[in-house]
Image 1 (cartoon, rainbow over the protein chains, first blue to last red):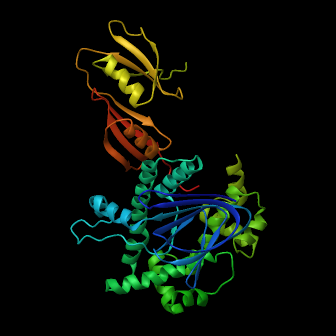
Image 2 (cartoon, rainbow over the protein chains, first blue to last red):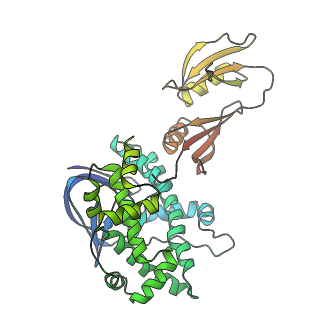
Image 3 (cartoon, rainbow over the protein chains, first blue to last red):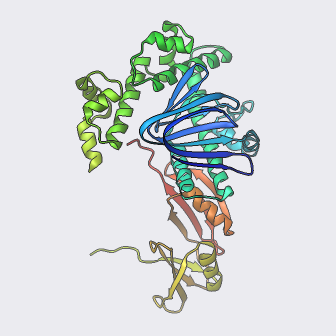
Length: 290
Length: 123
């Protein structure tokens, strides 16, 4: 097991770990962001079990109690950043104009970004910047100013993701009251995270609805409004993108990948993969190898 | 015929000031004097990995400033490194369609853009 922990003088904390086995009980010290660069890590928060994969990152709110669990044959590489609340407040105050532009606040009452405890896509600039930071940590970076520069950009990148994943998604919901939209979005986010975390298992629509405290009918209608896909289509897309990741990064046989991502039948997987990505899984793997 | 750029010419009003900026602040190394252009004092400096060589040309007449785009693998890191050496940036790292970029000038008004190209297309 390899572990690196650093607390900066402004109380921001960084931790990287490479391990096959872990079972830690923790309390979020600051606003916690978690990434996994290979394999998966499960975080039990309250009655939810959230699974973090290399295509996503998890945000946990200050004070949340959670259990981290890793159980893998190959080492799982993780990065956890705990943002000190004073750093975030200072960042928000110093970058109000940039944040207003990011959140399209111009002309409106200034709205501060929130940290919704959820799984977010690890793509775009956030991905580039965090991979650079991880590379610096792996090389033993000690320059706090440089680390804080990356953390500054990490918050900027999060606010952009927040605008797309939270504010813009809430706008799609057809409820007149903002409060209702926000509450329904929170529940839909729980439903989405349930699907993302259990994509490789068999579960029913009732399970998703129950986790999100919504009726099945309400879930079906509002999920599609928010995410443009039905829960079933959303699940299929998660399975296909994780299969794509395994085709790219592992030597697993296609039949093995089919079962690892929760599909029951290779032929329907191949058909769905080809429909979505316009290439067969075998050709995709061949192209990547070349 | 295979033609490619050998040196990026940069007009400066004082070679000594330019050498200090390119060596101490940008971290380039001085390689040799040049005689490519007659009647001008000139010097070649190149990046440490040898990818880029600049030909510094001392000129007494006012030249229009050059605009040069420098490629970087990590814009945040290089922005931080150059700032700590005293390079004054006109723009902090900001996000463009092409990727992340930041810009600075040399003492002669030539403008440089650090660009970390990023592909946002999924694999």
